Amino acid sequence: MIERSLFPPLTAGIRRGIEDLLLAIDKTFPLKRRFSAELPKNISRLSALLTKERSCLNGSYMSDPALFNAYLRCFMPWNVFRLSRLLPSLLLESWPPDGTGGVEITDLGSGPLTLPAALWIALPELRSAPLSFHCVDQNGGALEAGKKLFFSLAGGNGAWRIKTYRAALGERLKLPPAALVCAVNVCNELFQKVPQGDTASLASAAKKFTRSLAGFAGDSGRILVVEPGSPRPAQFLSLLRGEFIGRGFSIEAPCPSSRGCAMGGGRRGQKWCHFNVDADDAPPALHKLSTAAALPKEKVTLSFLFASKKAAPEKNAPEFLNVRVISDAFPLSAGMTGRYACSENGLTLLRGGFAEKYRQGSFFKIERPDKITRDAKSGAFILTL
Image (cartoon, rainbow, N blue to C red; front, side):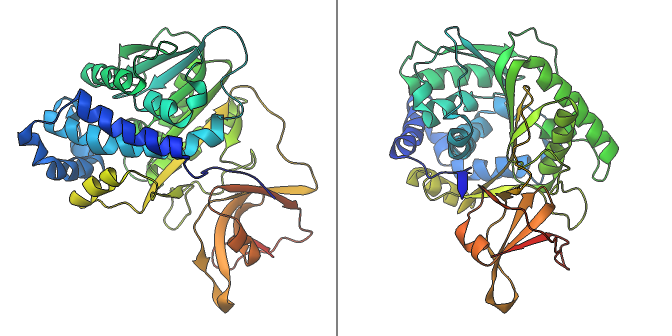
């Protein structure tokens, strides 16, 4: 039985909200003719800087008008789309916290306020809640642009308060204890200069960042870290996970247990925890722009960690095994279908009916098998229906 999918289909209201975001961008920041013709080229250029040429990125691209327009019109909407697929499953039923007072949210590396925009679009139930956002970024121009854009999108909504802080990641700030601390697409800044294979330095950076995130959270605060679904960010998130567990946090998602990470990446051939999400529901105009920039998207990828400062009891009854489906389906021998998953038994291979029934991100319980059988190729624990 599926308890919940991590990535439920977008509602009509959320799809409309992302389209409204594109309209708000055009209205708030009309594109000059000289930038319009070169927009696809600038999107491709920024994509290279954010991926293959990241060592050349110095953090000033938000101050370059051509690159900022590329980010605002392509990368930000896709990031909002990613978050809109994830946030309802994490927060819809259990957040914001009960109480009559305001709720504090700290958003690190906020840029043009991507997270507040995504929350506004994906969780309309929160629009009347007294939320106070503390948005931190080293680029003051991006923060100010984000405030203009958000209030254009929200129509001057009065329930949410937004305060911005120009500060580098890791800089000491005195902020109110937060019910939710978020860091979206910022971890690369922490390990950008760490050589591949230098696990010790990567672990040190993860420990330092965990301490910073935990310091912003209130007594029962939650922490959400979202990164691109590539091996290095996933490895870093796995190290963060271990640090959070060591501090007594509970991992609410995506992990099915608090045991060692089965998909930490870091070594050649090792699986890393990430999700591929269908992009069919994204606005046609966004698809068209991405295709013009030679960056068509059938799926978007992400890795994430959702932790709670308030320790929770283990999710599982002894007679049951918790399983989270991680991968898309792939063919196995004898005409069977397989999917990789994570469970308390480590990396898990679902075969047959399991792989056909459950989708990527699904969480389910199954009676604990009497015998553990391992796949000869991957070493994964096998579940066959």
